[in-house]
Image 1 (cartoon, rainbow, N blue to C red):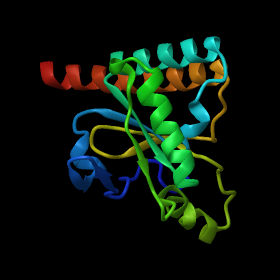
Image 2: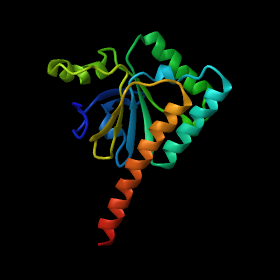
Image 3: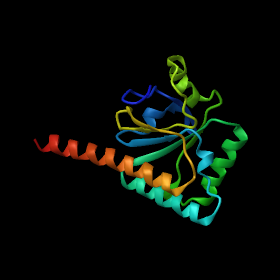
Amino acid sequence: MVWVNKKIPSIPVKTHFGNTFLNKLFTNQWLLIYSNPYDLIPSNEDERKNLEDFLASLRNMNCQLVGFSSRSFAEHLECTNWINSFLPDEDLFPVFYQNENLMASLENAEDKKGTRRVQNPIYLVDGAGVAKIRFEGQTKDSVHFRRILGKVGELVLNDQLAFQTSFQS
């Protein structure tokens, strides 16, 4: 997998406060980067509760969900409006619009190598900007949320234990 165990490129993002880079916005924090956050929009109350539980669990592990809209700008607006209207303030997560389809460009190296391209990849990136794992796309299914949380928890807790051990010694 091209980006696993490699530093994610410095990704330019537009914010309300001006242009910056993703690695400047979130430091000393794990990132879970969704390439199509529109797919996270729940279709019923149970899915909404699962999403809120998922976001709370990520927050407890010092992990920030970040979305990159890679389809149409209209879909991006619908996604961000839903997030701002329906999620509590503590669960809001940023969604950036990438009109050049940035996440697809991250996968171009895999195309050149002839490996199978992943549709809607999800990256887990550590505080140093290194991609630790890439998930195969996403579904709105809560079982998938649990699978992601399991992997995030395993990597984040191992990282914290390694830091505590080296700090004590």
